[in-house]
Image (cartoon, rainbow, N blue to C red; front, side, top):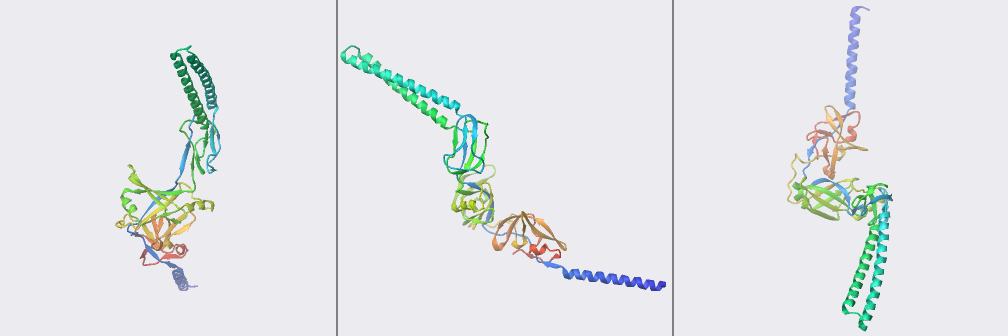
Length: 373
């Protein structure tokens, strides 16, 4: 083959390669799936505020020791259900038992002295009637009898006090409850006032939320208050209780929102409501409250733009010709208005309007982007 033919063959191969590359690029362009995008914006809900809260039992008690001694038995553990009056722990009672025996001996001695004084007073009355003793002697016998009677009453009171103290060696549940936590173990030294266990009544729960002082007017004027539980269910409280004072350090006011009693049935249906669980409280429709400034308002995105996979909550952010998955922290769901984004994205960023489509390998951001509805 001559030089001229070799150059012609090389030029042909180059042209063919370029043609194949162009066709491949065109094929990729045709295979790419454009996904609509939206631009994040701040929420504009006048008079609406959402705050984090915590679930608390309405009735909760910390059982404490009333006498000193070693804990000889801890009869419950965290999570146990107890009946009213059921023993929770026992403290060594040997010293107090000795006190009871001592007081009983004191009662027996006082009663013997009283019987002796009574007989002496009766003899003094007979002798006074016969004129053998003076009135002063009779008065002294009567006084001795009254002192003996007072001694008996004092000894009996001491015996009752000793018996009552011995009863304090058994720490019992004040009502039907669930053991939230235990604070001692068998063998520990119990002193008066030391916590033994914490129990709560599971039938009555409430949401507790700390409202900043700047939002206190909006919370008081809210036409509707809802509590969003961990599973997303929204519940309307049956009662509201606003504590009269504000915290001097955090400058917040505590709201206590009693939840319906039927929620306690969820604990037996595989959806337990436990003290300490996080929840969300929504104050909506506060009359006369101006809309929150855009800089302070949470970002809103369509519900379809949020991807939930197990514990992962994320969105697809447009970066050039592709999407990048980014984890976010969501807030309240506002129905057709979308979902609040508390952290993870900034105002003005482009997000995929459909997170499922954006996860495909050939997904590309469509242009132009539209603001969130």
